[in-house]
Image 1 (tube, one colour):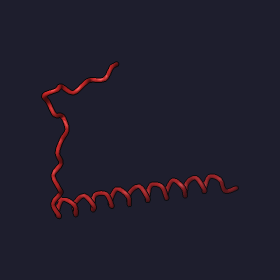
Image 2 (cartoon, helix red, strand yellow):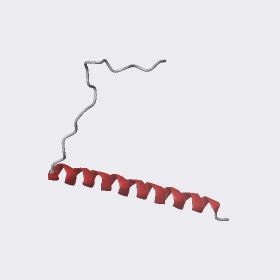
Image 3 (tube, rainbow, N blue to C red):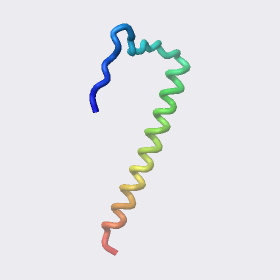
Image 4 (cartoon, rainbow, N blue to C red):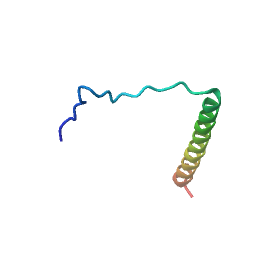
Length: 56
């Protein structure tokens, strides 16, 4: 499979606009929720793996 070249008269790059304060607040909240959820999942998996390693 080869590379697809950009046509000479077409610009395929996008210009992003700055986020509003509300969008930044929403994004940061979503990211924090994801991080918290992943930390809980990691903590639970570590706890389960250490429980299996302990002798009965």
